[in-house]
Length: 191
Image 1: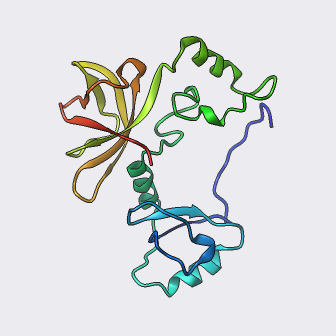
Image 2: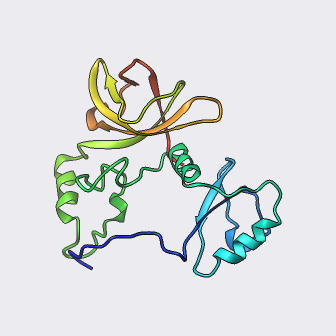
């Protein structure tokens, strides 16, 4: 509802299930997944127990943790509200401008859409990066010796490199960037 204080939280009818991307025996969980060791989908109400039962017969399938889901998210470059951006961000900064319905006369977010339209671009943008060595969250991002952003999420890849998400100022969106310690950051496209 417009202007209502709403909070979403997981309930007992939702679960995260992580399975190999090529599983076909559980029809309601079949999807074309990325080439990674894990994939994810939400199940409909009432499907949690049938899914667990179907998976019990699977070989090499283990229950995924919230950390597994978080690693999956970061490796895919998917920003998360409250971690990579907050309620003080414009939708376009977080890549969410397509979620604002501009077809109505007046709409929620109208001011932020107008701000971006008048500026010609958002003030900052979230980007997905890769680094050859480990990084820590909140590490500054620099370009030409000047701080231009910050790393917000990190996850180690299986090869020891780091997948990370961070934000940079608009003017640094295409610049060569590094972590403050000099570690080069390579931009990745979100999956």
